[in-house]
Image (cartoon, rainbow over the protein chains, first blue to last red):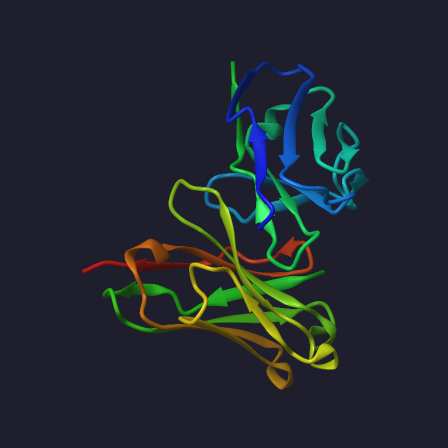
Length: 107
Length: 115
């Protein structure tokens, strides 16, 4: 199985900060990578697919980058609604795997 | 809009069986490959398995921890995805979500395996 390593596990930031989360695959997944946002008690919400394509309705402050094994999710200016947990997911193989998650907390 | 509603969760003893359902709407279910994904309390997300569309053979694939115990099936006439879970273990305790493509539509259903 392809392993996904996400960092950091927790990130403390303030409203207006630029934040970046990293996800690394154990082998090349080309650009078959998605990013999700999850809030407590809710299902994950798709933000980015194909590494850098913004899902419809998602604010443009979210962006994704990467190819092969190294990927990033950036929030250009953190808003109060963005405090949540973020997961990456590879879908290069049938046995999709997720990163461990990054909790974005208020500093 | 994709809508997915999971049901069937509950409290079950180790070794028991449970069947989960996922009612789908807002897309052409019969053409969709469907997945089950689970999330243990306070933990990350884990892919459980998938089923292809009938046109693609309706074949299934499973994650190693559930292979041989869980079975995914589909009823295209009712736009429903099913997950039959047998020989349940405490490690199977989680919220179970069905997904289509990359989309989670529902709130999930909680399965608690405990004596």
